[in-house]
Length: 451
Length: 79
Ligand SMILES: Cc1ncc(COP(=O)(O)O)c(C=O)c1O
Image (cartoon, chains in turn blue, red):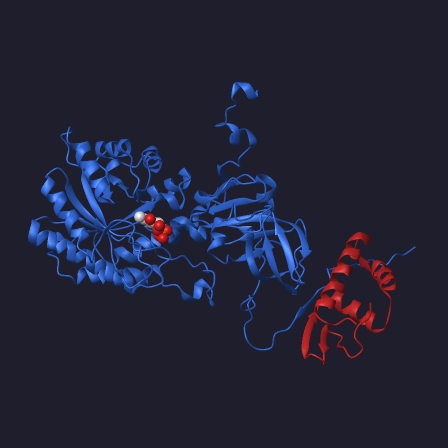
């Protein structure tokens, strides 16, 4: 008997056609399935290491770093990057940056110790942030690190700590200022416009106990304006030249902080980030021309330090995941539930992450909401997205997740997944294991009467 | 479960509702089902036809048919 082979089935859907303008789902994206990361199949990564799974491309990290350095050192003779630990402080990631020549920029005692553990020489660690404990400060002084003072109480604490020591800690002050971008980040450091920064500088000099070596600012994050950096660089140059004229100190470096945007799309923007954000070259151009044109003596040209975070790693990170279920909401919209949510992908609060199917699909697409697996109403990965039909068990690839997720992720309802780095030869390595119940309960203890 | 009488459909999946001016694109499966509905076939009839023709589990098809009917209702295409 001959049986007719049955035809391939697809879930029946209809899609409303919009004549003309963009709807709230944005323009129709041209989809491509993303079946591999740096040549390693998504399917085999998930089979081997589980789902969800963070994947980092070592090749991409190195390329990003090298091209950012090139953007600056082709324009300015003395440039140094310092890896912003909080952006992603998994040791393997930090090591890649340090191998490339990056210093470390840390904002807490444990980050500081991580940097030491990663072999960064003390004098190449920049210690930022408003919460440096006395023990952390002493350690930083001992290691001759660069301490960026955030407020007067810290300045006085540092002075009292170094009284019994016969060392002169190397310090800078963090300066906040009006760069024309609002809101001002005036909660960190000393204000430029109201004279506080200058007061701090004179206090440091009068004390005779501290060695003022630099000036620092970090004017914001995901900055879309290059001109703000021209203003910031100019104000730091002004302070440096006042230091020279009035206090006879030549400041050795200007640290312009981080803040360059990645090509992610911020929530609420009409155009994808890739079309709107300035490049590192654009930022390098305004910063370096401002400093070069300022009129420093050639032998006193300050070292330019950058503490870029997200722009160096965001697009080197992927989050692989799996579809759990589909459902339809009361208003008729389709909802797809994924096995990762805002606990794992913290940046979905800020970004409309690009998400690609990891397998072939037909041309038909649907508008949908993407939910995470948490029993929480806020667990929305994408409020509106147009994607091909996804079925339970299908895999997706979330793009540009390398920055801030692997540090701000939460162990809430589900545990943190594994992180894999694909080396330059295409070999995946686990650089952080998936968390387990045992791991989770290590710090817990049970009072005797409850045993 | 009946399609509104004035709904226009085409072979390639285009659906037009002249009463509202809305148009829709259906994928192959949805288009086939809508055309069956247009010919006033019942859901159980359509279900049998599809089960015979396509490589799909009965349970899956039932869920998807329910879902499509919901979509058609939301789209104001059902009576
Ligand atoms: C002091 C400091 N430097 C550098 C960074 C890195 O910023 P980004 O990732 O925006 O480059 C931050 C993060 O906000 C920061 O607070």
